[in-house]
Length: 209
Image 1 (cartoon, rainbow, N blue to C red):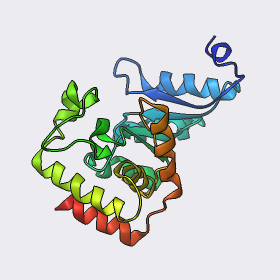
Image 2 (image 1 turned 90 degrees about the horizontal axis):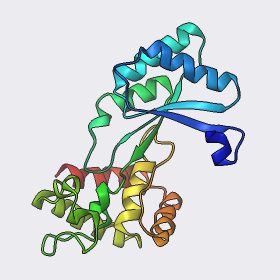
Image 3 (image 1 turned 135 degrees about the horizontal axis):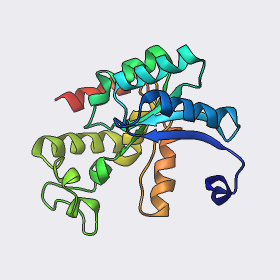
Image 4 (image 1 turned 120 degrees about the horizontal axis):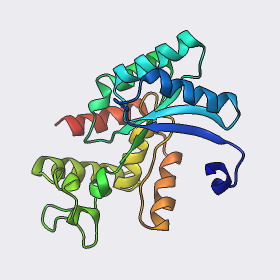
C-alpha cells in the first residue's frame, strides 16, 4: 500500500525511526532483510540510534547474512555535536553514512535571531523550547562571528551551517527543514560551497571559544 501511494515499485532507503525496546532486534532486522530480498527496498538505515544499537543490529545482520544498516540519521549541527563522541566514529569504522537533521537548530543558525530582538515573528523560536535553549549569550556571540565569517565570503549563515555539515566525515546528505520554497533554494547553494580543512578549522575555533 505504501508503494502504491508513493507511485513507485521500490524505496531506495528505508530507515527505522528509533530503537524499539519492545521488539527483539532479530525480528526487526529479519523483517527489514525480507523487504530488501523482495526488491521493495534497496537499502536500510536507522534514525536516532546510539552507537551500541547500530553495532548490535549490524553485527547480527552480518552473522545471519542479512542486509545491514548503511545509514544513520541523527541530530547534529554546529551547536549539537554529541554524536561525534561515539556514533560518527562507529560510522567511520563500519563505513555507515551519516545523515544529520535539524542542521539549522530550528532556525537559530540562520543568523536571523539576534540577542536584542530574539526570535523573528512567526519563527519556530517563538514557541519551541528546543530553539529557546540555544538562545544564550555565548551562542549568540558564536553565530554573530560565524555570520560575519560567512559574509566575508559572500555566503549566508544558513549556507555555512549546511556547508560545515557536508564537510564532516561520513556525512553523506543533510535533511534540511524549511517553511518556504526560497529556503530550499538557499540551502541548496551550500552544496556548491566546499570548505577547506583550514576553513573548517577556523570555524571550529569560533565554536570552541
